[in-house]
Length: 299
Image (cartoon, rainbow, N blue to C red; front, side, top):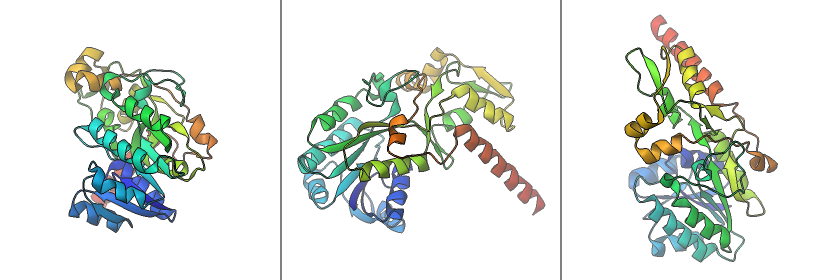
């Protein structure tokens, strides 16, 4: 298929680009600069340089593809950006069989011990803007799937660094976000990219699909893995109010959500995560660091 992709130089989008190209799809990557164009072309995509929120520019590109994946996440005005993409997709893909995969997020579901992919979202203030856009897509005649990634990790990137690189106290203990007992639902970026491809290639629209490796893990457990690897002397609860003061209230409230999802709907599509869980990833990172240190000392 010929696929239009936004966010092809980003954390999730670059993994999706590699997955699609590796599966034999022709990818047209929307970028805003020559530098970004060179980056996506080096990964096997065709670059389209322009402004994705310009309907007069984007809609002809959409008309010339078999499907589209939206992973771009601008630093500012994300609501307006996503709304503009959705408007263009509804205009061009509405009433057709062309697949559209839109990026949502796990936080939109709110807290829960068994989050249901098709359950009613209960978004905190930080991401409440997502819901009207998603509902418009789902209620339209677009063949749309909304992937809601868990907390994405892998390739030494992602929000896991809010824990692994968190400030330490005077005793070199990691400051936990809140008390650290909240579970985060996780997914490796490589596994997530494969889920996007499965959704894109599926014969039907899938509604909302949570990207979860099925191993929700507490913030405290992640921090303790850093301690076990020798990266800190211990952990200590910061408290919710202190976390809000440090990180900003809206962001902290999202990070304080206790969220557990199995990823059952994704697995019903035949998707099976290849990466065990975030703790195994951290253990592997520790082994790689130790090996590198030994090689440096022996050089």
